[in-house]
Length: 326
Image (cartoon, rainbow, N blue to C red; front, side):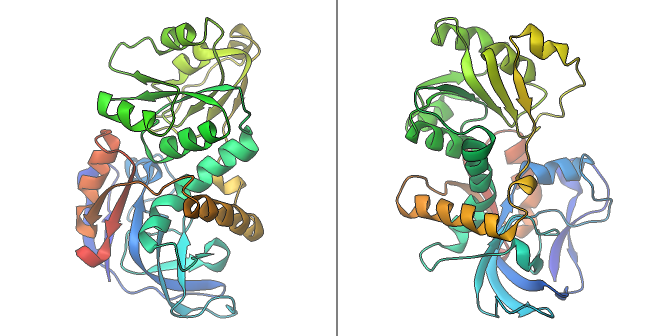
């Protein structure tokens, strides 16, 4: 079985192709052959040593494909069933062991490609706008990296609920893309851009009600300064690095702000909740409320190139790996 292996922490160059023994599903697990594998910033964190796995390991946790074998006690799935997953380890491989509790059966009208592109980012955008801070009509939001996988979906879900979105992006081309999704205003955040100052200008000095930030270190301070008093800072990722420790009194000095650091694991660990959120997500896809935007598909052995493109913000939408095109 071909797989991508990290033998030491480092840059994209440490992602190497290896032949590994084929895995077997244990009790409560299935074996799946993915046709599409999702690439996520979490994979970059782990490759750099900011995650839990210790080398050697195979990165990746999301994908979609077909069940090829089932483990002991599994009755809800059979070989031939199509599933998607976003919390199964060792995903950059031709065969993946998926816990049944993490497997999402796919409707006939949802392709593997769309499911792999949508599930993780879609579920993240779902819980951020329905549970972490429910989208409210008439509000304002600053969305960082708005042209990325989660950012695009956040922009769409917020605007469909009447929220005015200020979309922060890295290029004019990405600004045009998020305007097409309904963004109220866009900010191209080149080096030295005064994000908070521009947000204040756009909101008449008030600031936004909520900041959605998956970037982390590089944008944290600007996000705090962009919020209105008693606004909410939703920090859901750290693409630029983890936020440094800070005195909680900083939140008070910026106007009694709320700060939360949510994760998908705490919003989809219950299988029933996972299936409920997924069903609503696929319904939005079916109705055209959202789309599964794919920014690029790479052969499995080109995982390093996919990591570079994602990390250097050269892509728009979701990046996928394809074992079948290798």
